[in-house]
Length: 251
Image 1 (tube, rainbow, N blue to C red):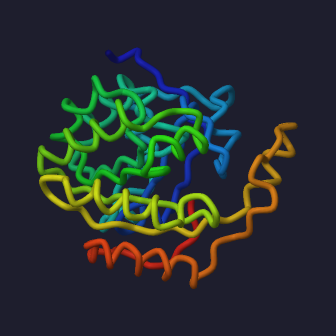
Image 2: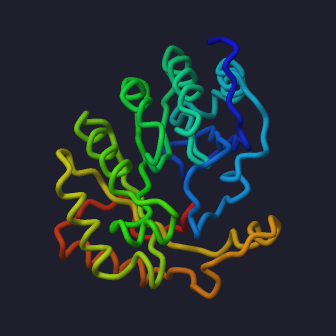
């Protein structure tokens, strides 16, 4: 579909935290979840950006491809799979040109596109917002049980390269119930992936104010290195030992 276009909110030309190496990061507009701790609410809103065709994405990548030799391109958001057809077309074109592709997703939608994306995506960075359905509903406005967890299981079964991301939010996602449930779920996966713990921060609160939105987690402090280390220890006790990083700010 040469005329297919996707709405891209913004592009980071030289990203270093969204996959291996230096990467071009596409922040696709829109997200079906309403995360109370979203640090990019302006992207999640999905009403701003520029339309690109898959060929225009490749052309933009090729302008700086020399710098991406050890990196590649990452689809992020928002939720990139909300625009699954566009992303699928992009991935197909990128792989024809031998570009390393990473997908930063919560797998909260677009399940009809996931199987077709498997051959073209080199790294899946999957965010679990909360481990229990109750906390997930509270933080995102959605239950994770039916779609997200099943998508993770199905994708993992295909032996893709996967990284699970989890944000440590003091008083919400850092208690023993949430962390033991997270460990329990990860251990049930056919091929246990590494886990990246991200420290909750409030650097995006001003974006909520600029959009005249109420930030419901006002008063929740940034997670400290000690908070993340405590969470990691609880996970260790519950049988999780493969960590990519023990401390990094979310986003």
